[in-house]
Length: 129
Image (tube, rainbow, N blue to C red):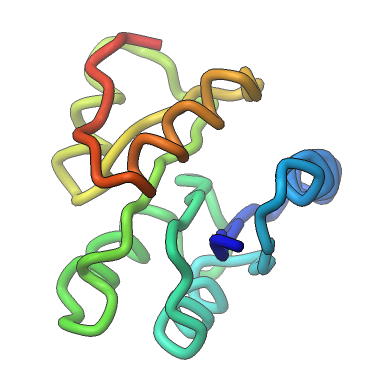
């Protein structure tokens, strides 16, 4: 069962997404801020990370840079999750090291396709959200 680390500060988003992912057969770990997310990623070594980019304490941009700079975690795929859907936001997420990008509100079917592709070693999708 693949382990997903969900780093999300919004309780409603966190609860909804974690329940839906668990029903799909994923083990879900939770972090509510970027600092906790980095610590959990380093100690638990999940198979994939869903990273909210607007987090307290340490934002998703900084947390992603740290994880991709760490030898122990740089291989873990990260999907950015953000309400920022302006032109260029996707490229900014990819530029800091995210492996794919998903906008909020989450389109669960699309998100699962991205998760499965990355877990299977396939390159990111280049669809614009």
